[in-house]
Amino acid sequence: MEEGRSIVALAVGTKAPNFCLKRKTAQGLEDVCLSDRFGKKNTVLLFFPMAFTSVCTKEMCDVSQGLIDFQQWNADVLGISVDNPFAQEAWAKQEGITVPLLSDLDKEVSAKYDVLLPKLAGIGTVAARAAFVIDQEGIIRYSEVTPSPTELPNFDRIREVLAKL
Image 1 (cartoon, rainbow, N blue to C red):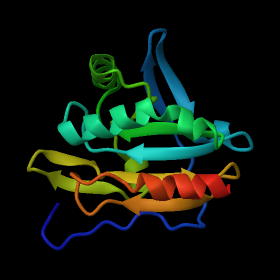
Image 2: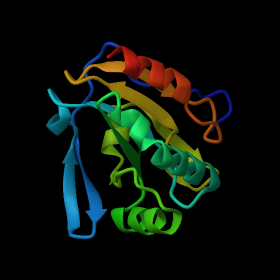
Image 3: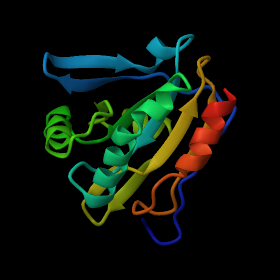
């Protein structure tokens, strides 16, 4: 992250911006829209910088192993990065990641959620590591951007928020 730069994500209590992003499946590319969950499921959005990196792999593998925990709170978990959907699929297969991974290749959704991290490691602009809990009505109930891309979100706090919904 740039020296002295901090990212402040969308605030708790605000309406979550809707989006439709591509996901690569065995059947091809499919659209995944946040609004399809409204009225049915809570949603945990996990923005992460890049596929095939150690911290992102740890996060998505750990969450994949604990997906059943999220289901008890009627919650879907979606991972979002600026990687293309084909790279995301290859990474998921290689690492056993079962969290649906959505491609924000044009960075529009990351910008809507105010989680763009400029010039990470001199490579380019990516999504910061961030977490949002969105209730069935589409309201943000938890919002976190980690201070550094190497730090994971507070999953205990995420579970506490989900348990109250």
